[in-house]
Image (cartoon, rainbow, N blue to C red; front, side):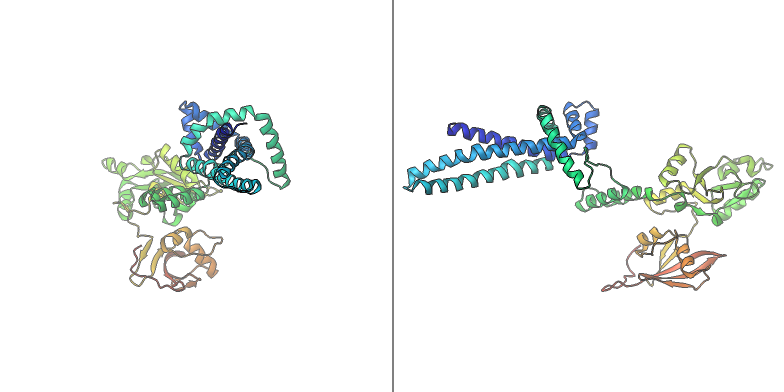
Length: 441
């Protein structure tokens, strides 16, 4: 074979090597959701790329076969051809023994071929495919699939042999790349996007809160039973108005014999429209109430409330006992943070004090203590701050009781009967730091 033809073949092999490397990394880096979207829209290139993603193991084996064939071809054809060029040049320029000139030519040729193979045939196409994953996958999918179809029997045999080796190591091979992500994985991805400036801080907070809803259930966001405002179904309009004014509630639960026998919900608006009909009762004005199990995921409860156009749901346990209620406001506060409207008379659940301590509601969840006060509480069989204190004390707390942990001290400052209403939290200074009372909540 003449040297010019050998060099031309070497260039083609180098380009083919780059093609297989780019195709391999394009399949690994491309977003499957985007490829599926384009395929659904009728893009034929995307359909080829999606077919490759569905048998990823086979396609990667094909890429490795192609790279190996090109690498061997470069070693067999390119190195001797380049060495021949250098050997002729050395023979014309200097008078060296043939053995010496051949060794120098071989070393130069090998260095050049290896350099071009690594940079042009490997690194450059890899970087291009990673930088443009979807466009590269669409561009290369069809010819790469054609190669895989032609060599499919050989590729499948090699892939079966490789899978056998993998199984010997105790690992089950996968034909597709695992693309599913847990909510925790997505939160980490959001954190990375925020750090890189791809999304704004407010967007990051909102999206992260939305994902974190998947870890909460109806019981986590409910107002506990002792704080549920209710009226008997026999209550008159005057009595309903008095309770609404005293509590600031616009929706009040209507009950029969007790809270475990709910009749429905009465809205203050309906009461006001029936002022002339003073003989009407709460039972007459009540509309059906949504009932949800305490373990129902919060995002599913939110969807049910939207579908049924309910702004309030009662939360029950497995025995049908009402544990509390959840309002649409409660769910939205889990999503975007606490807010107060014109009917919300509840004290803020966390208040910073001038001395750097916090006053927190006993019903504050453990995860809220960690996120809002930056205080970690040991894990255990409790969901709220009050539950933690009761467990640690081994009894119902009284005002003045305190519990200390490695990160903070907790002092009960207000009780509501046997319920812990308010707790003072003082953070302990971390080693090498001091608490900053001026830091905003």
